[in-house]
Amino acid sequence: MTDNNGSSEHSDKRFQDGKQRKATVYLELSDKLKDRATVEKIGIYRRANIVVTLNHGCKKTVISSISPLWTKTISEFEKQAKRKNLSIEETIEITDFLDNNHERILEILDAESRDDLVDDNDLNRTKEKQRILTEIEESRTANKNMILEEWQEKLVGKYDHLQETVNRNLPSIWPALEFELSILKVLNIKDCTLPFAGIILGVPSSLKTQCIELLRSWPKTFYTDNFSAKSFVSHTTAVPKEMLTEIDLLPKIKNKCFLTPELAPTFAAKDDDLI
Image (cartoon, rainbow, N blue to C red; front, side, top):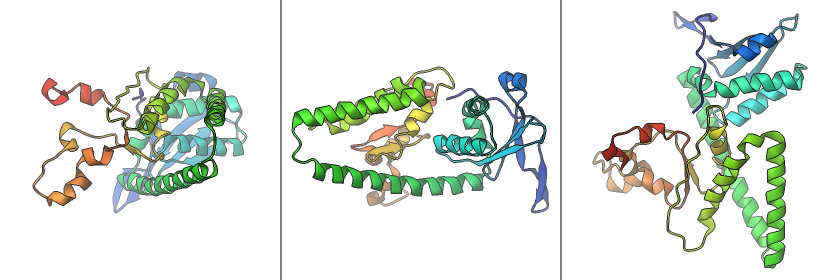
């Protein structure tokens, strides 16, 4: 959902299977980075690395790995940038540029690299969901005799701490994140059977997708960035009826918070399909 800059024609090349292919694609620098002249070039190595060449006199490079969970990609780059003694201001300018181009960066990766990243990330999310469920169960056991007033006081304290932390690090995402958390908690309302739909609107590069990404590892959520009207209930006869629950989207999102970062194709569809 962000505006992406195109890549330049210049790139390193390598040979693989007897054919010449681009190993690194260089992104067109923003005017802000060009004016500051800190960065000489930013390349995306197709085997899942960001390579930033700096104009620091000694041709320093910052190399960091790419993850489909974009917040992890940025965290890894910030760690590597600190190791190479980049200033906080320089790091922020580069990460802002990477944020604005994150969809383009993921597109550049080899298909094989994307598959490997997704597999690893799915495994990490499964472990993270299990950790959260264990933590919730331990908290319920430890606080089963808590009175309402004490529960409310602790809840407000955690809310204030979360808001303070977000405003200190990424203040622009708080309205969207608070909205998403409110929707997620609809699942906790006893006997609630009415689904609630929330749509986040914002200018490009306002970190809308990153807010959604933060909830991907939470239990009772289902994430997809590609779906259609037929994907909810396919009625396909190519597989046994009992296997439709593994294919159709509707059973997968039942009693869950359905997350999707891109609705523009849906609302651009024909009226009949949209209905």
